[in-house]
Amino acid sequence: MIRKIIGLLIIFTSIQNFAQRNNTSPYSFFGIGEETSQKTVEEISMGEIGAAFNSPFKLTFSNPASLASLRFTTYTLAIENKALSIDDGTNSESASAASLSYMAMGIPFGKKAGLLFGIQPNTTVGYSLLEQFKDSEGTITSLNLFTGEGGTNRVFLGFGYMLRKNLSIGFEAAYVFGSIDNNLLNRRDAVQLATMHQIKSELTGFTVKAGVQYNAKINEKLILKTGAVVNFDNDLKNNGKEYLFSLVNNSGGLIIPRDTIVNNSFESTVKIPLKTVLSAGVGQENKWYAGVEYSFQDALDGLLIQSNIVSYGSSNRISAGGFYTPKFNSISSYWQRITYRAGFNYKQTGLVVNNTSVNDFGISFGVGLPIGQQLSNINVGFELGTRGKKSEELIKENFFNFRLSLTLNDKWFRKRKLQ
Image (cartoon, rainbow, N blue to C red; front, side, top):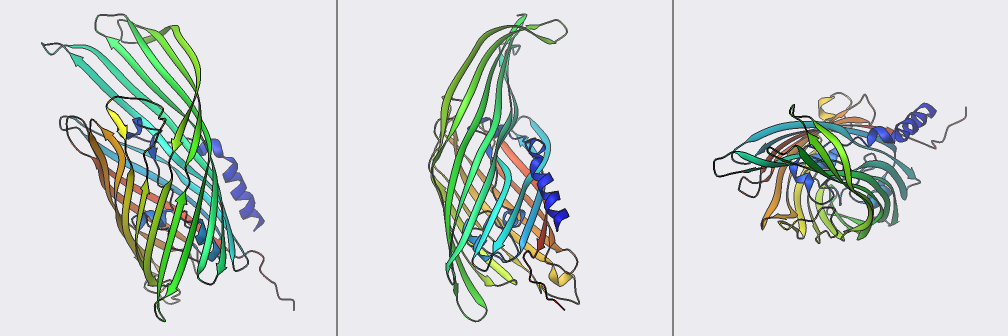
Protein backbone atom coordinates (compact mmCIF):
# COMPACT_ATOMS: atom_id res chain seq x y z
CA MET A 1 0.00 0.00 0.00
CA ILE A 2 2.76 2.44 0.96
CA ARG A 3 4.59 1.73 -2.30
CA LYS A 4 1.41 2.56 -4.22
CA ILE A 5 1.00 5.88 -2.41
CA ILE A 6 4.65 6.85 -2.92
CA GLY A 7 4.43 5.89 -6.58
CA LEU A 8 1.36 8.06 -7.06
CA LEU A 9 3.02 11.01 -5.34
CA ILE A 10 6.00 10.67 -7.68
CA ILE A 11 3.64 10.78 -10.64
CA PHE A 12 1.90 13.90 -9.36
CA THR A 13 5.18 15.71 -8.74
CA SER A 14 6.21 15.11 -12.37
CA ILE A 15 4.00 18.01 -13.40
CA GLN A 16 6.54 19.51 -15.80
CA ASN A 17 6.55 16.34 -17.88
CA PHE A 18 2.76 16.35 -17.89
CA ALA A 19 2.71 19.93 -19.19
CA GLN A 20 4.25 18.86 -22.51
CA ARG A 21 1.02 19.27 -24.42
CA ASN A 22 0.58 18.13 -27.99
CA ASN A 23 -1.87 19.25 -30.65
CA THR A 24 -1.87 19.29 -34.44
CA SER A 25 -5.22 20.94 -35.23
CA PRO A 26 -5.28 24.25 -37.15
CA TYR A 27 -8.48 25.08 -35.25
CA SER A 28 -6.40 25.35 -32.06
CA PHE A 29 -5.33 28.76 -33.46
CA PHE A 30 -8.59 30.23 -32.17
CA GLY A 31 -9.60 31.17 -28.63
CA ILE A 32 -7.32 29.70 -25.96
CA GLY A 33 -6.84 26.50 -27.94
CA GLU A 34 -8.80 23.34 -28.51
CA GLU A 35 -10.79 22.32 -25.45
CA THR A 36 -9.96 18.81 -24.27
CA SER A 37 -12.58 16.32 -23.16
CA GLN A 38 -12.53 16.47 -19.36
CA LYS A 39 -13.72 12.89 -19.05
CA THR A 40 -12.25 9.44 -18.47
CA VAL A 41 -11.46 6.97 -21.25
CA GLU A 42 -14.54 4.99 -20.20
CA GLU A 43 -16.81 8.03 -20.57
CA ILE A 44 -15.33 9.07 -23.92
CA SER A 45 -15.75 5.51 -25.24
CA MET A 46 -19.49 5.85 -24.52
CA GLY A 47 -19.85 9.02 -26.60
CA GLU A 48 -18.77 11.32 -23.73
CA ILE A 49 -21.77 10.58 -21.53
CA GLY A 50 -21.16 10.46 -17.78
CA ALA A 51 -23.05 13.16 -15.84
CA ALA A 52 -25.71 10.65 -14.72
CA PHE A 53 -23.47 7.60 -14.29
CA ASN A 54 -21.93 6.39 -11.03
CA SER A 55 -20.11 3.27 -9.90
CA PRO A 56 -18.60 1.93 -6.65
CA PHE A 57 -15.29 1.08 -8.37
CA LYS A 58 -14.99 3.46 -11.34
CA LEU A 59 -14.16 7.17 -11.46
CA THR A 60 -16.12 9.57 -13.62
CA PHE A 61 -14.95 13.16 -14.10
CA SER A 62 -18.25 14.50 -15.46
CA ASN A 63 -20.14 14.91 -12.20
CA PRO A 64 -18.58 15.23 -8.71
CA ALA A 65 -21.83 13.90 -7.21
CA SER A 66 -20.83 10.45 -8.51
CA LEU A 67 -18.07 10.33 -5.86
CA ALA A 68 -20.70 9.59 -3.21
CA SER A 69 -21.08 6.11 -4.77
CA LEU A 70 -17.35 5.28 -4.69
CA ARG A 71 -16.50 2.30 -2.44
CA PHE A 72 -12.92 1.54 -3.46
CA THR A 73 -9.80 3.69 -3.44
CA THR A 74 -9.19 4.12 -7.17
CA TYR A 75 -6.11 5.23 -9.08
CA THR A 76 -6.28 5.99 -12.78
CA LEU A 77 -3.77 7.05 -15.42
CA ALA A 78 -4.35 7.54 -19.16
CA ILE A 79 -2.44 8.29 -22.35
CA GLU A 80 -3.69 9.12 -25.83
CA ASN A 81 -2.54 9.42 -29.43
CA LYS A 82 -4.35 11.76 -31.81
CA ALA A 83 -4.00 11.17 -35.56
CA LEU A 84 -5.30 13.90 -37.86
CA SER A 85 -5.70 14.37 -41.61
CA ILE A 86 -6.44 17.86 -42.97
CA ASP A 87 -8.01 18.73 -46.33
CA ASP A 88 -8.86 22.19 -47.70
CA GLY A 89 -10.07 20.93 -51.08
CA THR A 90 -6.70 21.55 -52.74
CA ASN A 91 -4.05 20.25 -50.37
CA SER A 92 -4.03 17.60 -47.67
CA GLU A 93 -1.73 16.88 -44.74
CA SER A 94 -1.58 14.40 -41.89
CA ALA A 95 -0.01 14.45 -38.44
CA SER A 96 -0.21 12.76 -35.05
CA ALA A 97 0.66 13.59 -31.45
CA ALA A 98 0.82 11.55 -28.25
CA SER A 99 0.40 12.85 -24.71
CA LEU A 100 -0.63 12.03 -21.15
CA SER A 101 -4.40 12.44 -20.74
CA TYR A 102 -4.90 12.53 -16.99
CA MET A 103 -3.83 11.25 -13.59
CA ALA A 104 -6.31 11.01 -10.74
CA MET A 105 -7.10 9.32 -7.45
CA GLY A 106 -10.47 8.77 -5.76
CA ILE A 107 -10.92 7.96 -2.07
CA PRO A 108 -14.22 6.88 -0.45
CA PHE A 109 -15.15 8.09 3.04
CA GLY A 110 -17.55 5.68 4.65
CA LYS A 111 -20.66 4.81 2.66
CA LYS A 112 -21.84 8.33 1.87
CA ALA A 113 -18.90 10.39 0.62
CA GLY A 114 -15.92 10.37 -1.71
CA LEU A 115 -12.99 12.60 -2.67
CA LEU A 116 -11.23 13.00 -6.02
CA PHE A 117 -8.08 14.85 -7.00
CA GLY A 118 -6.06 14.86 -10.20
CA ILE A 119 -4.57 16.74 -13.13
CA GLN A 120 -5.42 16.84 -16.83
CA PRO A 121 -5.07 19.14 -19.86
CA ASN A 122 -7.70 21.86 -20.17
CA THR A 123 -6.91 23.28 -23.63
CA THR A 124 -4.16 22.54 -26.16
CA VAL A 125 -2.55 24.64 -28.91
CA GLY A 126 -0.45 23.34 -31.78
CA TYR A 127 -0.69 24.71 -35.31
CA SER A 128 1.34 25.84 -38.33
CA LEU A 129 -0.55 27.79 -41.01
CA LEU A 130 0.91 29.27 -44.19
CA GLU A 131 -0.74 32.17 -46.03
CA GLN A 132 0.66 33.12 -49.46
CA PHE A 133 0.09 36.23 -51.58
CA LYS A 134 0.64 36.11 -55.36
CA ASP A 135 0.75 38.67 -58.16
CA SER A 136 -1.22 38.48 -61.41
CA GLU A 137 1.35 36.10 -62.88
CA GLY A 138 1.12 33.67 -60.00
CA THR A 139 4.46 34.59 -58.44
CA ILE A 140 4.56 34.56 -54.64
CA THR A 141 5.21 38.11 -53.44
CA SER A 142 4.90 37.59 -49.67
CA LEU A 143 3.85 35.06 -47.10
CA ASN A 144 2.65 34.85 -43.51
CA LEU A 145 3.54 31.86 -41.35
CA PHE A 146 1.35 31.44 -38.25
CA THR A 147 2.62 29.06 -35.56
CA GLY A 148 1.50 28.35 -32.03
CA GLU A 149 2.05 25.96 -29.16
CA GLY A 150 1.14 25.46 -25.51
CA GLY A 151 -2.15 25.25 -23.67
CA THR A 152 -3.57 25.12 -20.16
CA ASN A 153 -3.82 22.41 -17.51
CA ARG A 154 -6.20 21.97 -14.59
CA VAL A 155 -5.49 20.58 -11.12
CA PHE A 156 -8.84 19.60 -9.61
CA LEU A 157 -10.32 18.55 -6.28
CA GLY A 158 -13.84 17.13 -6.07
CA PHE A 159 -16.11 15.94 -3.26
CA GLY A 160 -19.41 14.06 -3.38
CA TYR A 161 -21.91 13.36 -0.60
CA MET A 162 -25.08 11.26 -0.43
CA LEU A 163 -27.83 13.42 1.09
CA ARG A 164 -30.22 10.50 1.30
CA LYS A 165 -30.70 7.19 -0.46
CA ASN A 166 -30.46 7.65 -4.24
CA LEU A 167 -29.75 11.42 -4.03
CA SER A 168 -26.20 12.81 -4.12
CA ILE A 169 -24.57 16.21 -4.59
CA GLY A 170 -21.00 17.18 -5.37
CA PHE A 171 -18.64 20.09 -5.87
CA GLU A 172 -15.35 20.49 -7.69
CA ALA A 173 -12.77 23.29 -7.65
CA ALA A 174 -9.89 23.49 -10.11
CA TYR A 175 -6.84 25.68 -10.58
CA VAL A 176 -6.15 26.40 -14.25
CA PHE A 177 -2.68 27.39 -15.41
CA GLY A 178 -0.59 27.37 -18.57
CA SER A 179 1.18 29.29 -21.29
CA ILE A 180 0.44 29.85 -24.98
CA ASP A 181 2.79 31.23 -27.64
CA ASN A 182 1.35 32.66 -30.87
CA ASN A 183 3.74 33.77 -33.63
CA LEU A 184 3.38 35.48 -37.00
CA LEU A 185 6.34 35.55 -39.41
CA ASN A 186 6.03 37.89 -42.42
CA ARG A 187 8.42 37.60 -45.37
CA ARG A 188 8.40 39.55 -48.64
CA ASP A 189 10.00 38.59 -51.92
CA ALA A 190 13.26 40.41 -52.74
CA VAL A 191 13.28 42.04 -49.28
CA GLN A 192 16.07 41.03 -46.96
CA LEU A 193 14.30 42.00 -43.73
CA ALA A 194 11.44 39.95 -42.29
CA THR A 195 9.33 40.57 -39.17
CA MET A 196 8.16 38.33 -36.36
CA HIS A 197 5.16 39.29 -34.22
CA GLN A 198 5.03 37.20 -31.04
CA ILE A 199 2.46 37.09 -28.24
CA LYS A 200 3.23 35.10 -25.10
CA SER A 201 0.31 34.49 -22.74
CA GLU A 202 0.49 33.21 -19.16
CA LEU A 203 -2.99 32.15 -18.03
CA THR A 204 -4.17 31.44 -14.48
CA GLY A 205 -7.55 31.17 -12.79
CA PHE A 206 -10.00 29.06 -10.81
CA THR A 207 -13.08 27.14 -11.91
CA VAL A 208 -15.93 25.71 -9.84
CA LYS A 209 -18.67 23.27 -10.74
CA ALA A 210 -21.54 21.64 -8.85
CA GLY A 211 -23.50 18.51 -9.64
CA VAL A 212 -26.43 16.41 -8.52
CA GLN A 213 -27.44 12.80 -9.24
CA TYR A 214 -30.65 10.92 -8.55
CA ASN A 215 -31.24 7.20 -9.04
CA ALA A 216 -34.71 5.66 -9.19
CA LYS A 217 -35.58 1.97 -9.31
CA ILE A 218 -37.85 1.07 -12.20
CA ASN A 219 -38.19 -2.57 -11.11
CA GLU A 220 -36.08 -5.23 -9.40
CA LYS A 221 -33.43 -5.06 -12.14
CA LEU A 222 -33.65 -1.72 -13.92
CA ILE A 223 -32.44 1.62 -12.56
CA LEU A 224 -33.03 5.09 -13.97
CA LYS A 225 -30.02 7.37 -13.44
CA THR A 226 -30.24 11.15 -13.86
CA GLY A 227 -27.68 13.90 -13.40
CA ALA A 228 -27.07 17.61 -13.85
CA VAL A 229 -23.88 19.68 -13.68
CA VAL A 230 -23.30 23.43 -13.68
CA ASN A 231 -19.85 24.79 -14.53
CA PHE A 232 -19.99 28.33 -13.17
CA ASP A 233 -18.66 31.22 -15.23
CA ASN A 234 -15.11 32.27 -14.41
CA ASP A 235 -12.26 34.52 -15.51
CA LEU A 236 -8.78 33.50 -16.58
CA LYS A 237 -6.18 36.20 -15.95
CA ASN A 238 -3.69 36.69 -18.78
CA ASN A 239 -0.27 38.17 -18.04
CA GLY A 240 0.94 38.68 -21.58
CA LYS A 241 4.00 39.90 -23.41
CA GLU A 242 4.09 41.22 -26.96
CA TYR A 243 7.20 41.35 -29.12
CA LEU A 244 7.97 42.58 -32.61
CA PHE A 245 11.32 41.51 -34.05
CA SER A 246 13.08 42.39 -37.26
CA LEU A 247 14.86 39.45 -38.86
CA VAL A 248 17.45 39.12 -41.59
CA ASN A 249 16.46 36.80 -44.40
CA ASN A 250 19.77 35.85 -46.02
CA SER A 251 20.37 34.25 -49.40
CA GLY A 252 20.51 30.77 -47.87
CA GLY A 253 16.97 31.07 -46.53
CA LEU A 254 18.09 31.34 -42.91
CA ILE A 255 16.30 33.84 -40.68
CA ILE A 256 18.62 35.61 -38.24
CA PRO A 257 17.33 37.89 -35.40
CA ARG A 258 18.34 41.52 -35.78
CA ASP A 259 16.43 44.06 -33.64
CA THR A 260 13.60 44.11 -31.09
CA ILE A 261 11.17 46.78 -32.28
CA VAL A 262 8.42 46.26 -29.67
CA ASN A 263 8.62 44.79 -26.17
CA ASN A 264 5.41 45.34 -24.19
CA SER A 265 3.74 43.73 -21.19
CA PHE A 266 -0.04 43.73 -20.79
CA GLU A 267 -2.87 42.20 -18.78
CA SER A 268 -6.23 40.95 -20.02
CA THR A 269 -9.06 38.64 -19.00
CA VAL A 270 -10.54 35.64 -20.80
CA LYS A 271 -14.15 35.13 -19.72
CA ILE A 272 -15.39 31.53 -19.64
CA PRO A 273 -19.22 31.49 -19.53
CA LEU A 274 -21.50 29.22 -17.51
CA LYS A 275 -21.98 25.70 -18.86
CA THR A 276 -24.93 23.42 -18.12
CA VAL A 277 -24.99 19.63 -18.57
CA LEU A 278 -28.07 17.37 -18.34
CA SER A 279 -27.99 13.58 -18.59
CA ALA A 280 -30.18 10.53 -18.08
CA GLY A 281 -29.85 6.80 -18.63
CA VAL A 282 -31.27 3.42 -17.77
CA GLY A 283 -29.54 0.16 -17.02
CA GLN A 284 -28.86 -2.83 -14.82
CA GLU A 285 -26.08 -2.45 -12.23
CA ASN A 286 -22.75 -3.89 -13.43
CA LYS A 287 -24.51 -5.37 -16.49
CA TRP A 288 -25.46 -2.68 -19.00
CA TYR A 289 -26.23 1.01 -19.28
CA ALA A 290 -27.56 3.29 -22.04
CA GLY A 291 -27.81 7.06 -21.70
CA VAL A 292 -27.99 10.45 -23.37
CA GLU A 293 -26.40 13.78 -22.46
CA TYR A 294 -26.82 17.41 -23.52
CA SER A 295 -24.62 20.40 -22.70
CA PHE A 296 -24.93 24.12 -23.47
CA GLN A 297 -22.56 27.08 -23.05
CA ASP A 298 -22.70 30.75 -24.00
CA ALA A 299 -20.03 32.41 -26.16
CA LEU A 300 -16.45 32.93 -24.99
CA ASP A 301 -15.20 36.50 -24.52
CA GLY A 302 -11.84 38.25 -24.22
CA LEU A 303 -9.88 35.97 -26.56
CA LEU A 304 -6.11 36.09 -26.95
CA ILE A 305 -6.14 36.85 -30.70
CA GLN A 306 -8.74 39.16 -32.19
CA SER A 307 -9.76 38.76 -35.83
CA ASN A 308 -12.40 40.32 -38.06
CA ILE A 309 -13.20 36.99 -39.71
CA VAL A 310 -13.69 35.05 -36.47
CA SER A 311 -16.46 35.21 -33.90
CA TYR A 312 -17.83 33.00 -31.14
CA GLY A 313 -21.41 31.97 -30.55
CA SER A 314 -22.98 29.59 -28.07
CA SER A 315 -21.88 25.96 -28.15
CA ASN A 316 -23.75 22.74 -27.44
CA ARG A 317 -23.21 19.00 -27.51
CA ILE A 318 -25.54 16.00 -27.66
CA SER A 319 -24.23 12.51 -26.88
CA ALA A 320 -25.57 8.98 -26.58
CA GLY A 321 -23.92 5.72 -25.64
CA GLY A 322 -23.51 2.97 -23.11
CA PHE A 323 -21.80 -0.26 -22.08
CA TYR A 324 -22.44 -3.99 -21.77
CA THR A 325 -20.74 -6.56 -19.52
CA PRO A 326 -21.88 -10.20 -19.98
CA LYS A 327 -21.07 -11.22 -16.37
CA PHE A 328 -18.75 -8.91 -14.42
CA ASN A 329 -18.16 -11.37 -11.53
CA SER A 330 -17.71 -14.53 -13.60
CA ILE A 331 -15.14 -16.93 -12.16
CA SER A 332 -15.05 -19.44 -15.01
CA SER A 333 -14.80 -17.07 -18.01
CA TYR A 334 -12.48 -14.09 -18.43
CA TRP A 335 -14.27 -13.05 -21.64
CA GLN A 336 -17.59 -12.62 -19.83
CA ARG A 337 -15.97 -10.03 -17.54
CA ILE A 338 -14.92 -7.79 -20.45
CA THR A 339 -16.90 -4.56 -20.76
CA TYR A 340 -17.87 -3.32 -24.25
CA ARG A 341 -18.58 0.39 -24.80
CA ALA A 342 -19.83 2.50 -27.72
CA GLY A 343 -21.41 5.89 -28.41
CA PHE A 344 -21.50 9.03 -30.54
CA ASN A 345 -21.61 12.80 -30.09
CA TYR A 346 -22.36 15.88 -32.16
CA LYS A 347 -20.95 19.28 -31.20
CA GLN A 348 -21.64 22.80 -32.36
CA THR A 349 -18.33 24.26 -31.19
CA GLY A 350 -19.45 27.90 -31.25
CA LEU A 351 -16.52 28.86 -33.49
CA VAL A 352 -17.63 30.86 -36.55
CA VAL A 353 -15.12 31.60 -39.35
CA ASN A 354 -16.27 33.91 -42.15
CA ASN A 355 -19.88 33.36 -41.06
CA THR A 356 -19.46 29.58 -41.32
CA SER A 357 -19.93 27.46 -38.18
CA VAL A 358 -17.38 24.79 -37.27
CA ASN A 359 -19.11 21.60 -36.12
CA ASP A 360 -17.79 18.28 -34.87
CA PHE A 361 -19.14 14.72 -35.16
CA GLY A 362 -17.56 11.58 -33.73
CA ILE A 363 -18.25 7.96 -32.90
CA SER A 364 -16.40 6.05 -30.21
CA PHE A 365 -16.03 2.52 -28.92
CA GLY A 366 -13.80 0.56 -26.59
CA VAL A 367 -13.35 -2.28 -24.14
CA GLY A 368 -12.52 -2.68 -20.46
CA LEU A 369 -10.14 -5.59 -19.84
CA PRO A 370 -10.10 -6.97 -16.26
CA ILE A 371 -6.76 -7.50 -14.52
CA GLY A 372 -6.64 -10.83 -12.67
CA GLN A 373 -9.54 -11.53 -10.34
CA GLN A 374 -9.67 -7.97 -9.03
CA LEU A 375 -11.89 -5.04 -10.04
CA SER A 376 -8.92 -3.27 -11.64
CA ASN A 377 -8.82 -3.03 -15.42
CA ILE A 378 -7.18 -1.71 -18.55
CA ASN A 379 -9.44 0.42 -20.75
CA VAL A 380 -8.87 0.80 -24.48
CA GLY A 381 -10.82 3.42 -26.43
CA PHE A 382 -11.08 4.52 -30.05
CA GLU A 383 -12.67 7.66 -31.47
CA LEU A 384 -13.06 8.73 -35.09
CA GLY A 385 -14.87 11.66 -36.64
CA THR A 386 -14.76 14.92 -38.54
CA ARG A 387 -14.53 18.64 -37.79
CA GLY A 388 -15.27 21.52 -40.17
CA LYS A 389 -15.76 21.16 -43.90
CA LYS A 390 -13.95 21.80 -47.18
CA SER A 391 -14.65 25.33 -48.42
CA GLU A 392 -12.90 28.61 -49.22
CA GLU A 393 -13.18 29.63 -45.56
CA LEU A 394 -12.70 26.32 -43.73
CA ILE A 395 -10.75 23.10 -43.77
CA LYS A 396 -11.98 19.60 -42.98
CA GLU A 397 -10.32 17.51 -40.32
CA ASN A 398 -10.67 13.74 -40.06
CA PHE A 399 -9.43 12.46 -36.72
CA PHE A 400 -8.69 9.08 -35.19
CA ASN A 401 -7.89 9.05 -31.47
CA PHE A 402 -6.54 6.12 -29.49
CA ARG A 403 -6.73 6.13 -25.70
CA LEU A 404 -5.41 3.76 -23.07
CA SER A 405 -6.01 3.91 -19.31
CA LEU A 406 -5.08 1.86 -16.28
CA THR A 407 -7.48 1.77 -13.33
CA LEU A 408 -6.43 0.17 -10.04
CA ASN A 409 -8.81 -0.44 -7.14
CA ASP A 410 -7.94 -1.04 -3.50
CA LYS A 411 -9.66 -1.11 -0.10
CA TRP A 412 -8.33 1.36 2.47
CA PHE A 413 -9.10 1.34 6.18
CA ARG A 414 -10.07 -2.34 5.96
CA LYS A 415 -10.90 -3.87 9.35
CA ARG A 416 -8.57 -6.72 10.21
CA LYS A 417 -9.73 -9.74 12.19
CA LEU A 418 -7.53 -10.81 15.10
CA GLN A 419 -7.11 -14.54 15.60
